[in-house]
Image 1 (cartoon, one colour):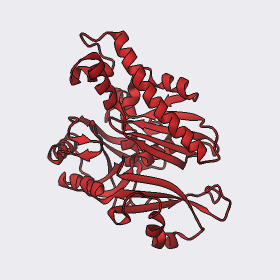
Image 2 (tube, rainbow, N blue to C red):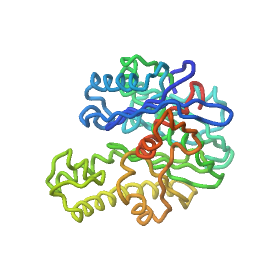
Image 3 (cartoon, rainbow, N blue to C red):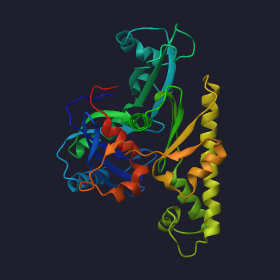
Image 4 (tube, rainbow, N blue to C red):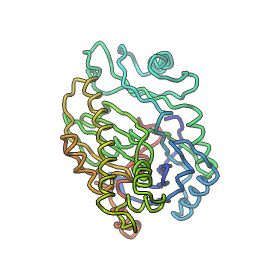
Length: 355
């Protein structure tokens, strides 16, 4: 969005539970996976998107760069959470240059922050009727990111020796992955739900184009906390139990009850977002839900969501239509961590200057 340099690039997803790095090469046939690495970090390093210990995060990034023998310095990163506002707004028809000049004034009425404290970007949606009010308006996606959060992340990757060339938003990276992997039809409405450790991104697209997005401060950490509290176990044991591992002193029936309770809370949050989307658009149905993120791997979550929401739910495969050489990246690793890689794949697709 705000930085531009030359290719090639690497995608770097700095999450609150793990850092993911990925590099793609592109050709006429599509994309091929060049490098992929993942490194788990302690949960206290990044809390609710805020970097609490920049030094240790920088060290983790540097270690990942060394392990993957990365030579490229240009990096694409992303942000999400309460410091990011994404709004679909309707404006009188104007050129992109005219909107560039007036966007600051237009944004003031839509964002809860002082407009001087944010970086702004926008994208005019391709459908002239996308605003739902005829051809007298145009639909625009407005993005505002607080400057302090943006500076925090760009300073971090620069300290690791990298050049930030694009800063994206987590939710839009899912749209990138969905667009190249699933070839959506013009009328299909899909919800891309990425459930990380501390943030859940809900991104709804129609025919592959943006319709609605929302970030919710919940995720895998809530499962861990609930298991610790209700089953009286420590953090490490709760993490293992959440992943489906056998833990001494944890009865499978009791664990299943806790997991189902939390599944219900997530489903309720997603359902409320779907209801709000329907109330603010002419779209009455959501055809399919695609789950991603580390928490999407919770046993039984996809069928549970499908039953509660009344919509087909499946896992988003970020490596669909991406060529993978087993000599470069272990296919078993990709299968194991695939749901966690959606954001970083979407970042690696980005190039400076595209929209």
